[in-house]
Amino acid sequence: MSEPVTYAANTAAGGGTAIADTRAIEAQAEMVTVRVGLPWWQLLARDPLALCSAVWLVFLVVCMLLGPEWLGKAATDMNLRARNAPPGSTEHGWLMILGSDALGRSMLARLVVASRNTLAVAVTSVVLAMIIGGVLGLIAGYVGRGVGNLIMRLSDVVQSFPSLLLAVVVLYMLEPRVANLIIVLAVTRIPSYLRVTRAEVLEIRERGFVDAARAMGGSRTHILRRHVVPIVTPTLLTIMTVDFAIVMLSESALSFLGIGIQPPEITWGLMVAQGRNYLAQAWWLAFFPGLMIMATTLSANLLSNWVRMVTDPVQRWRLEAPKMAAKTDG
Image 1 (cartoon, helix red, strand yellow):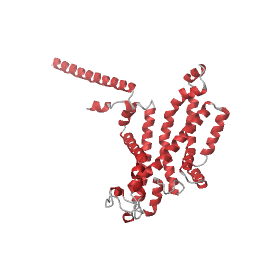
Image 2 (cartoon, helix red, strand yellow):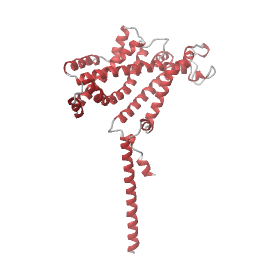
Image 3 (cartoon, rainbow, N blue to C red):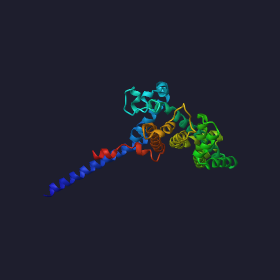
């Protein structure tokens, strides 16, 4: 009786050892995969929410570049017979699938054309703010003393005013043009990049490799360009994706208040403002532009979370590691 029990125990022990060896091999393969690193498009494919957000933003970029050329005339042509046509009606053509406004203009065409002004203002403002704020932050963090203190005090002055209120006052005093709108929105976002860049530089300049570069005769410009900027840039890119959503909401709010981009130009915020008087009769006039604003800001926020995870070495492994749990369960 003891021999079968001993044989069964040995078999169970051997099976347990085989399972342990298999898991060890899988763990080693996972570690090798994490060490090697995956390209960004594979990391993007492993995050479904970020992938959907990226696809939506790419679609909007295509609409921004090609939409006005394809649908510019349809966005301005009036058809009073089709005024306030509800969504789903195709009696006056497929462009009326999302309905029409009070002048019979296609909502689909106007949404596509409005994407150029809305996204162009947001992207230009954010990029301009990142460049100016990043350069000033590098100077304030590395040079320090008088110049750095002066830059920080100017940043405090700008940041002491509510950004939307400052934009309202400036645009009310100046002509509400696209250039003025971009400048105002960029100025209100500069302090964010400035402070983050300065904090990063103050920490990086005390590291050993910076001291070594300084001891070997490297100039300030060389050290900043070769050793500091590559470390600071991922952080600024993450902030830029978040700021894109904030700036787009600010532009939409200013257009809604009537001091943003003026007709005959179109933005999503302006379309919401024009449709608020028809909420009882034609809800889609304000709903679809608002939906575009919400979807775009949500996509930008989700993509910013993915960018933060990819650029952070501590969090990147969560996307690089294969789905070992699924393999084990199978």
